[in-house]
Amino acid sequence: MNLTNAKILITRPRRQADSFAIALHAAGAKPIFFPVIEIGPMEDTAPLDRALTRLACYEWLVLTSVNGVEVVWKRLAALGLLGIPTGVRVAAIGPKTSAALQVRGVKPDFVPDEYVAEAILPGLGCLDGRWVLLPRADIARPALAQAIQAVGGIAHEIAVYRTLPANPDPAGLAALRSGVDVVTFTSSSTVRNFIALASAAGLNPFHLAGNPVFACIGPITGATALEEGLPVEIVAETYTTEGLLKALLDFNEKKIT
Image (cartoon, rainbow, N blue to C red; front, top):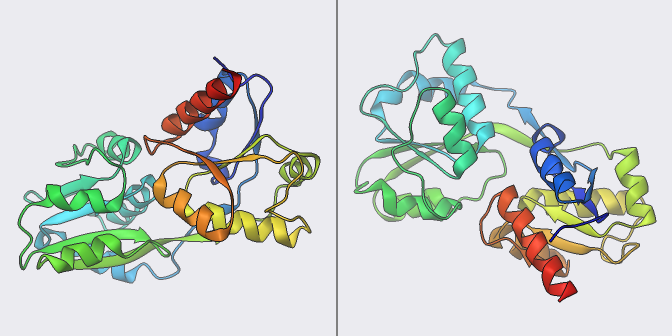
């Protein structure tokens, strides 16, 4: 089964979209880049720098994205620090975050089977009075920090990168105007910024040409899309772009049969 000639819009940041686009193309689809967010640095790195210089004081370092890994290692290098101190355990959300750590010589102590922040907590053990460092996006949900604090842990959240609206890609915008088959979302921020960018371009994101299917990488993104008024038809069971591709293929097969 394939996605022959299906026009599939990719809304994730452009520099993170290539592997998904290649996989879609291999399945017969026509991937269309329309990044609605981009990742930017924090202007002030002092909060993260202070935390990294006393990293040995933390029980856990929890990394929720490849972006977070990249920023932390960049700041470690800038500070002349040689990686993660002995005794500090590292948790990662998702296989790509885990892979980004392993490339840097760190094997995570815990990676949950479900790739959402809340799934981390059971693997952290007793946290009573213990510090947990949470480098995150500036718009990250507070759920994990709240859960850690609820069991007596001390969650130290630090925004280490910004999620910014992207400038609309002309080719992607033209494709939206003429009609696409599927719009994919890989985070809640892609949902919200897609609606904002489409609206700013004079399009009605709730009534687009071609009546596209909306597909989400997981239930949190799916819930955001539904809350915003988009009729979500596909939610991946495995919260990765590979899982999203499988969900697209499964949906296509059901339509045909």
